[in-house]
Amino acid sequence: MRDLVLMEKQILQLLQFHANDDYAKDELAPLIAKTSLELGHLYSDLGLASRKEMGELMSKNFTSLANLKPEDIRWKKYLYDCIGKTAPACATCGDISNCFNCTLNPEKKENKEILLPQRFVSGNKDLVILVSFEVTIILMSFFLIYE
Image (cartoon, rainbow, N blue to C red; front, side, top):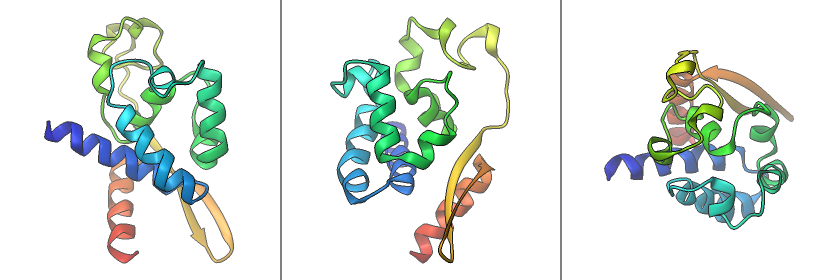
């Protein structure tokens, strides 16, 4: 149970970090984080009709994160990859063979270093870079302490 609470919090922090505005940060991010724990596909659990609608929602509200997401990875998988976890639904998913670099699929047991999108503001410039999971945890901790 604590693992689920921690994963929800990490997904929430990731989404809030990349939110375009207060609505995305305060309304959508908590909804998406909580819904990501459910066992269905994220887009349908959110009440969306398709993965295309999910992509549009994320592009509109979490642009920096959406710009860095590979096209061939699904949103729930991508969010959980970003926090270095496996989504709770993955254990019972019947679509594992089609999922991008799924660690539960024995044919795709590649253990690549996960690179996470991060946005930093330097002066008036918005810089998006990729950093490793370990660096992300350190940076997120730093920003949470000094916000």
